[in-house]
Image (tube, rainbow, N blue to C red; front, side, top):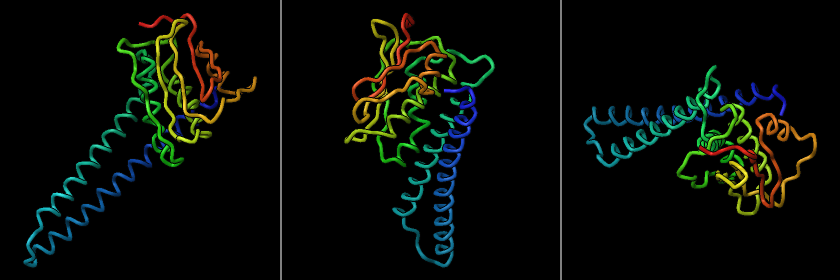
Length: 210
């Protein structure tokens, strides 16, 4: 993946998350309008329905939680581009990639998840931003060609040959041409990317989990 893809990737992620936040605000605004209508009716002597008020409150709380989750992901993603970023465990990077791509997954009607990770953090010798970029691009590749179950996942493991992240849920075996930009990005991070039945596998040979 050429270095020139980094800025478009950053823009794509920010655009998707800002769109999600606008959806959150739209729902909150709608519920605020409903509360205003109820207040007007109450001012005219109509009794308030406690169940209806509780439903509005529940909806607002749900949207606040949703907005908080989006902003948490956006903040974590932004910090991967810090001048001196902290090392990002592989499972944490994969989880962030999964959270950043939820809207795209929903648009494709594909389930997207992170499989349970090892108890001990698995760290690879890669900067956080390109690592999240690589994992995201691999997940996008899988979502573009999902299997019949339409459920894509990524699993992290401390394999015998080094740390590994495996994307599954693809139809058949992924094809990787010699000039595939994913191969270039993986190589730049010291990783080996290979197709496996039903997905892609990223491995850092000799990388010591810690």
